[in-house]
Amino acid sequence: MFGKLGKQYADAISERVEGLVNDHLEKKNPGGASKTEKATESIGQISGRRRALLIGINYVGQKGELRGCINDVRNIRSFLESTYRIDDICVLTDDSSDKSKLPTRANILSGFQWLRSGAKAGDSLILHYSGHGGSVKDEDGDEEDGKDETLVPLDYESAGQIVDDEVHAVLVRGLPAGVRLTAVMDCCHSGSALDLPYAYNVGGDLVITESDRTRGISKMVSAGVRCAMDGNKKLAMESLTQGMKMVLSSGKSGGGDSSARAKAIQTRATVADVVQFSGCRDSQTSADASIDGQATGAMSHALISALKESVGQGRDLTYTQLLRRMRQVLEGKYTQVPMMTAGRKLDLNASFGL
Image (cartoon, rainbow, N blue to C red):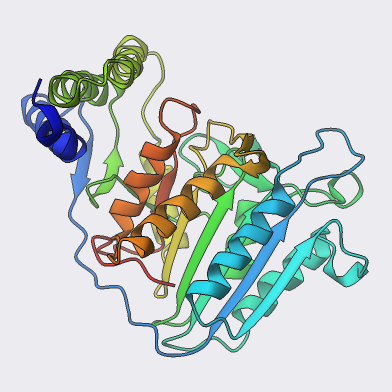
């Protein structure tokens, strides 16, 4: 309808419309709408060393064998080393001939300890995990959905899974102020894999509660705007369908447990700058895909694609723009929705950096 100009600005305008409609509905129905809070704490600058831990598990020869996780590690490593100065790197993959580099439960936990050892203000710590993720019953009342998320090591059948409480305790808790930890978790049920208490929307606001009905109506309106702007009927219909599902499912499941939320903030907030990008919501699965002839995790592909695109265009993405772009790369192809969480109330409209 609006030609080239409409297509150029369709994403930005439809996202803005979605936000405005959501805000309006929140004001009209504050008891059932999502509540957001502005985050104003600044993320620190990186002036020290960069250390990276990359984990990829294909579970070769096991039930539930995957194909793309080792490729994800190779692709992430190549991108990091070509874009940033990486001082130390540790890679755990199940094709390694070195037993100390296999992604077993013990080696993964040792890797977490290595990644954070000696960290001080200005340092950047990078974690990438690609493999299976799971969920188990929450036993200590700090999960709003009643479930703990898990990482599934190579030897999970004999050694057990790694519960998010343990991930947080070993890797996150006690990190000094001024340290930045960026975690990329490409696995199922990964929305809260690091057990961080603050979730963000694509506008950079802290999400306190969510109403599927409110978000569904907002998404349907923005889909109509997008269709009018760029004529992308297929994408508009996908957004309309997703919005309608949200509306129809609203009220079928209860909201988050407020006591669990309070406990999570009290016990899992950090003084360090800890940010996690996850492949999906806690209730979703992440795709092991084939893209351009290569087996890869869909989320890892979306992340690298978005970052390469911004580097190629000579511009910096903010954290929230990166999250939005990852969702756009996956939208219409996969059902998973990438998420972003943090250990404190960081203003993630700041430029993304590692």
